[in-house]
Amino acid sequence: MSRIFIERSFTYSCPSKLFCIELLEKLEEEVALGVEVYAELKQDKIIFRIFGLEPSVEEAIVKIKNFITQFTKIKALNPKQGLTAEQLSKLIHKAIPLDVLAEVLKRQGIAGVVIEGNTIYADTDLETLQVYSQLIAKALDKTKFLRLSYNIKKAITAAIALYNIDVREILEKLKNCGMLNENEELIVPWQRALDCLEEAYPM
Image (cartoon, rainbow, N blue to C red; front, side, top):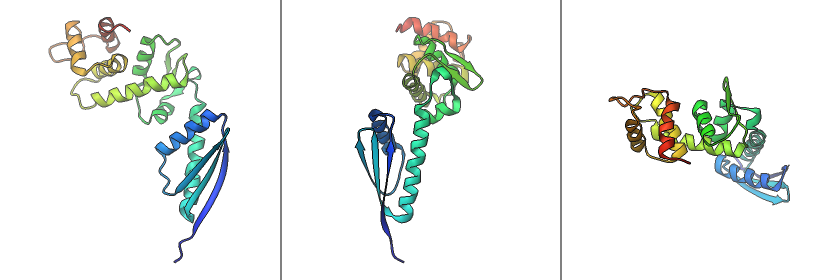
């Protein structure tokens, strides 16, 4: 059976040159295509040229176009108009607790932070929201194997995102503040536990 190699091309017009650049960077990071792809940037346009076996080329074009659609939707998100937990997880590729994100944003001085159902609102831009969401996602990775209650894990996650301190140091500070019992369980709401750390690590 003969193997048919083909070339296909298409052009995508971006809202801006910066958008084009970010799109190409994310496409390279996140999408495995299995064919040769050349992307030429001309002002605010990208010319895609795809080489490979015919079925693979057609599949790659579909993947690229689907990625562009999703990327465009994400870039249109606005925290002031609200982001759902699902939209946020697609943005950072990890589910995070909205109440922890809300608490971190408030303690960073961001106004208008409200949670309604599974949607968070905040008077900030998408990039800022994404940065703090990613910090929380990384902090979650450090707490997932801890044999501690869900409440104290929330406090620890928020503290790592806010102050970049390690778990042992957080627990020691909370003990000194009288907020933990002998079993390392919080005896106050997890949000209040952060008040102790805020005094120790003023921003």
